[in-house]
Image (cartoon, rainbow, N blue to C red; front, side, top):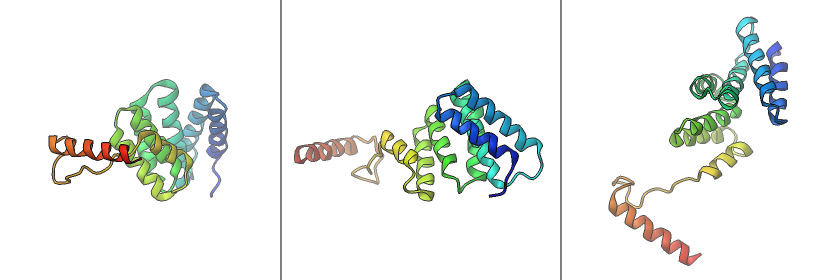
Length: 158
């Protein structure tokens, strides 16, 4: 991976976040973001800086929409980086979109099937099974009834 001055600040930001130093993590990620913007020669991997900065903006400052926009851009630019999908899934959930969060989790797990953060997120959200009758809407009374029967049958068998 090509070295860019922003990567050192980003690594320090990630360590600060993991150590519970939220404000410090945000300040370091912001500094890394400015480096990416101002210092020429940033490789495509620098999109991860935008992912972290957007994630921390949302989590620390409560700027969910601004942060989500940066993370969405990063997930498109650095589409090979599972961490961008962890950030995207968490922020989509924070913004109230379970469907988009699950989509980000699926995309991330396609890249890294053993990623612990993505697996943890998927397990915490749960994954709905297909409705009993796929040609009817999930909320249709017949599907709801059949789904309840299926669930009761599995509960009594287990």
